[in-house]
Length: 315
Image 1: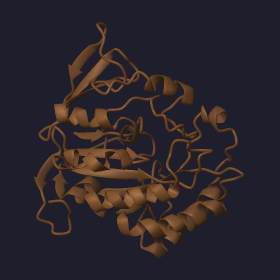
Image 2: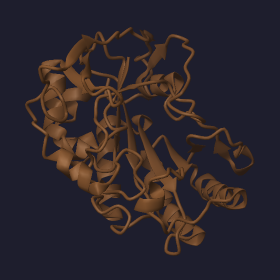
Image 3: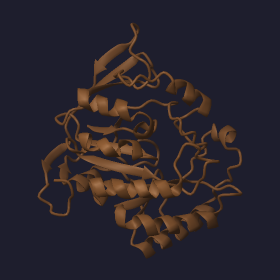
Image 4: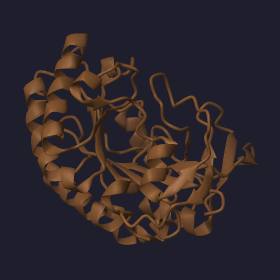
């Protein structure tokens, strides 16, 4: 089983103590978003977890203790650094701080395990095509030696974005191709592999790899592991990633990113954040008498270790 720590909330940035305690105690409880009284129990032990996937916009809080997890589990790290400022991402560190933290993360775990996410790509009067190219070129120059690849996606126009970010401009097919061509040219100049996320759109003429940023092949290559062949459906339409089990909760990230799909709105996220107890097995609150807890089926995916690969760090 693949455990995801950051698809629903920025667990690394805001819930570090809880996350480390869950791995120390060896289990976690997760509410079903559609049926809140149904709770899944996941064992967080090396015999049940094939890989731990991290997704965050700020790894600074966990860096000093990250070895508590990387020393026991195969891991992969997605670090989101974008062109936007506090007007769009109020809780995210500035670019300079984010770049420095990514470099330190890469030094700890090795560049093969780190992917830079520049997503979502969106357009407003302030964040123009030209501004995206300018920021991407500066970041690519800094980050290329420290990451395995860069992954970008185009913003998905969820209904709530009409309320949370009404200034968004439509991304026409022509604009998407213009953005892909520009980003692809910059990435190629820096020797940085570039990949699209969450779409079946063919952007290969611009040097962009197809979707599938979290596959068994990429996770295995990052950790010197070979996984069983497994048919999977992806996480949503246009996604070609292996299914994971997310241990977070929606509407709980205080970052306040205005394009966020995981938060209904910033106020609700902050209200839920106040329910957090670092000692609880649940991210928010504690199990109640009406809750049903069941042990999740956790079948191993790894076939064998390839850890004699001399390129891999940390072994």
